Every structure is written in structure tokens, then in C-alpha cells.
Image (tube, rainbow, N blue to C red; front, side, top):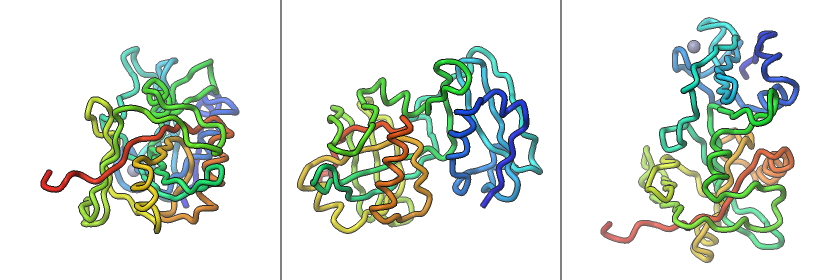
Length: 243
Ligand SMILES: [Zn+2]
């Protein structure tokens, strides 16, 4: 488990709320932005900021110090389709008595927009999705509304290494997510029944490849209560035969 170090200037810039948010981030799946190797040992937090947009990244202690790097005015969040590293968790979760198919996407590196001054950090991807018709999720009582034209395409047995794969496409056809997904028992049945899945995106902290439903629900609730979860229903299906 990496040991996170933040310099005084990083702490001052992030403020108490930002520090709490940063501490929620799992470094287990993270990558050093300098050498691109998995994070281990002592890890230093680096904050790149131009005052209105802040990007938090991590480096090995041997690769660089914990510091604040001032960026130019054109420093801005990339659209998610530009290739955020994401993890995807599938689960069947109770929502007000109905077992619904759920997908949870989390960015591995965390980027934030500073909204209301220091410390008010909003996940860049979540922020982008709110502008795309996703809703801020405060509790898991019912499925959030559907966003038109977003689609999840299941590539069963055709993931990057022959496992099950998933493509999540935005209305412009951009690949929001392309990678593997580990579908638990019952997920396909429920997805086929409804024709959609609930797609949650946020800082949830689901690190193990397969969580039990109770752990997943608890993590989602915590993220929702912290204002760190957005969601929508998206159509899901398998590609038509021959396509
Ligand atoms: Zn490194």
C-alpha cells in the first residue's frame, strides 16, 4: 500500500476539504506520471493548477517531490473521451426493492475543477457528465433518469484479453470507456430485462476487482453523501449479430 506524502504548499492549496478528498483516492491502481510505473513505496502528490482548474497526480518519491506546479491559462480538463484511465465495476444492487444492473466507473488519476475557491474540488469527469444530462446522486433509492444516446455495448468474451468487454459511447460516438468488465451472476439477466443499466461515475474507491454487493453499496452511499457521485441510466446491449 503506497504511503502518500503532501508538501506544506500542496496542503495549503488543497485546503481541508481537498485533503480529505485526496485521501479518499486509492493509489493502489495508480501510475506515476513521471515513469509510468505502478505506484509503490512513498508517493508524492503533485498539484497542477492555473487557479480555476486543478489536476492532482502522483509520483514516486524517487521520481519527484510533492509540489504545486503553476500552469498557463489554457490548462483545462480534457474531455473524458480523450482517454482517462478508468476502472469499471459491475454489480446487481437493490434500489428500493428492485435488483438493478449497475456499472460504476472511476477515473484512476483524479482531476478536479476548483469551483468555489480553494478546497471546493469537483471531479472533472463528474462535472463533465453533469453537463451531459447526468444527475448528482444523493441516495440509491431509485434509478436516476435515462440519458438519451448514451449506450453501453457488451462485448462478451471479446475484452482486451478475451474476457468480457464493455464499450460506453457518448452521443457523439466518443469512447467514454473501452475495456474489460467482470459481470457478476444475474447482471446480464437484469440488464436484458430492463434494457438499461445504471451508470454511476465518481470517486467511489472500489479497488478490488470483485466486491460483494454490500461493500459496493456502502462505498456508493458514502460517495453519494459526499456529493461525489453522478449517475444516469444508459441503454445497454450486445452488438447485433454480424455487426
Ligand atoms: Zn515513478
